[in-house]
Image 1: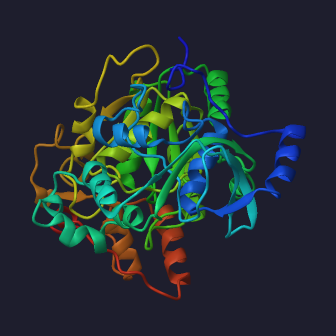
Image 2: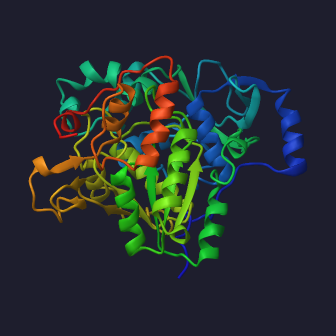
Length: 422
């Protein structure tokens, strides 16, 4: 059997230039109008460059943006769950070529042919937030969302802070950033991941999304996937996170340690991808599955509160949303990667091992409920961590990281995590 095909029916759509073509376009960029871009746009560009966002070859038009927010599809009916847009204050014209510049690193990331410019009013931004970031949790209730989200939801804050215009058009990507140098052997493109899986003889591949250090629940999910698939792809976000989240270098060191000591290495591949978190909860779970299809992944592990923020989303809303997305859209247009839905997992003292609500008959007083947020909060405060919450080797790495911090970041707990036993 073959790996799942890339999303969109067009193969891997890679916008990253190479060789002489790259050199010529880099020189051309220096003579174009220079537009500074956000870290989010930089990650989106790299994903378009390496084929991770296939079939996208540029930033979305107003028709695409509206359809994605409202219908989970691009304007041509191809499934897509989250807007990928470029915002700016500068006035540019349709037909103009512009250079997209990373001000933090001082490099040109791409050139772009402008095909549309559309204004994003305050009302437009609020509508996007309500469609994409509002969930079914208590903080998303109609009387609470706009009271809480502007100060507590990083995804909503990101959208509301966007500039006056969205600009659409195809891109020619000039750089992958420094990810390949920073994460050698971990950062990989969809083509590289596919080649690795094919060399291993894998066709049914599960992906574990990580933005937190890998604790026992993550380990348990990965091992469930190994039992029912050819292998598991432990795929970490190496782009930007919100304050209080743990840097990618530390998380990757933790994963390396776990794989070395607690996995059959032949059944695991670790990878990193260059995207910023959008913190879109269930919609982001769909995005994780969509671009994992481009990496050759057939099954996306979706556990409790996937990509969640605070109490904006129901605990299993990211699983349930897969049952509500449009299907039978046409050749290549459907989402092929399927969710592997896993119930609430924990360590049970009476079971003497990891378990879930589907397998463990005991009460909550016998369980250590595992939460990445809870772990970060305990470590950041120097509090003790319960037995069986994480592997000792991993906790040692994390304690070393937290002891090196000179400034502490407050970690907000979800109500369900705060109420469970540590």
